[in-house]
Image (cartoon, rainbow over all chains, first blue to last red; front, top):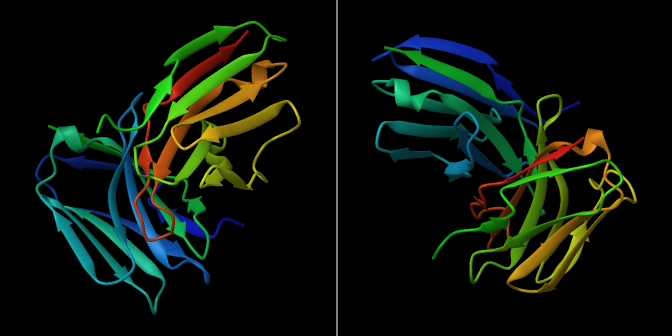
Amino acid sequence: KNEVEQSPQNLTAQEGEFITINCSYSVGISALHWLQQHPGGGIVSLFMLSSGKKKHGRLIATINIQEKHSSLHITASHPRDSAVYICAGGGATNKLIFGTGTLLAVQP
Amino acid sequence: DAGVIQSPRHEVTEMGQEVTLRCKPISGHNSLFWYRQTMMRGLELLIYFNNNVPIDDSGMPEDRFSAKMPNASFSTLKIQPSEPRDSAVYFCASSQTGFIYEQYFGPGTRLTVT
């Protein structure tokens, strides 16, 4: 059983829409990473957070430690945001446990 | 810094051949990770090093796979002999040691074994 669960698996949005991707994780995970991968491309780390909220441009990541839940929000979505978004949990070691990813398509 | 550097970017080889993938981590990072990504299984950790020492190789699929990190600026992942099911994208990533640090990924090596 994967210790990191993501939803939805696939998401289609219209340009300009507000997007939310969710991630739930199990006991033992102390930090949550959000990664972005464009089709055929490399992997970019967007955020690492262990509490609270972080913002970078139109991207916002939040984490609720009590509920073991994190969300990635994209405001004013754009076709260039189309990518796979992956959440990954880190614990006492350096190892990351990956979610299955969310394939986002933003249509113009 | 140039980021994590991987070579080659693409490798096509025949079954049974030896394949060596190379990685140069970001200077100052003392943790290095090798991942494999396939459509079926997503991203999987193969092995990671702290300060050039292998810490966890439980993700290495079988004895055909081996990884080394002879110094802080270089690591290799070797597959011998290669099989078609090894076809995947192999990523190397580096970070400072500790789960609170972001991992920086290389561009990946796309391996095709025919």
